[in-house]
Length: 308
Image (cartoon, rainbow, N blue to C red; front, top):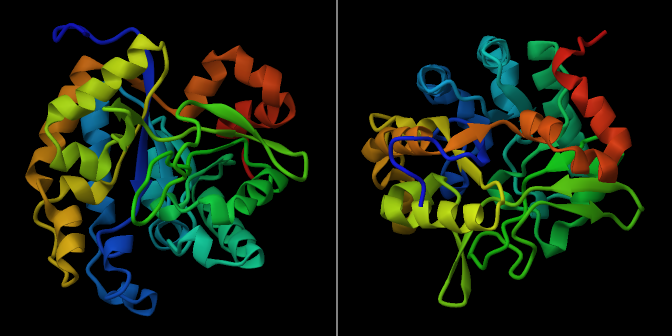
């Protein structure tokens, strides 16, 4: 077990899904996308709070930004980039991939990428689906991402869940070879092996709802295998004062439970473990280049490539 007074030597991957409290899938059945602009946005202030926390711990992360956010609040996207973090794509409208046609998915992804790249004048090559919605029924999305030049994806949760997941999928980073022969790296969010089951343990609601020891056990399992864990959270999870939305009991439980503990628990993880962005993780590990060299060559220059 890692010593409480020093950071782990293994660098894990910290990710942030940049969306507002009213964007989440939990309330998609009660909050229509057509009225998003009518809600008071808190995403800028919440992102700045998170950025300050990461600065205090000298930690960089990958921020998967919603295109809707980038289009309306380009300055916070610029600030994320200027503070040294990696920008990546989290779709434009936060629609589940498995609810879209391939054409709709391509248009949504390209629109989001354009909004993010224009906001910060930097190319992006990472993608994460809303609600982990690359499932068996939508694996075609990885082909489209590879065709569009994305180097990596972090959307497949290898668990059984009522909203997402591919049970039995690989738990660790791997190269996905698409039917069109193109290749893309897949980085699953962290899981925990317990009692013969693979359980989700990657942050978000799992960090808030379960005891912190649950998350730390996942870290220990990954470090015992000398693997980097992918952790995620949302800016709204640091905002216990956010407006309350109506919705199903299960949705309210998942969204609002222990919001006041997020910052404290994240701080403990930042103190105990070492984190980096996907961009820096890929740059430090040459074996990724061996499997995906053409795309990663472009990715290596992404952070400094201005858009013409």
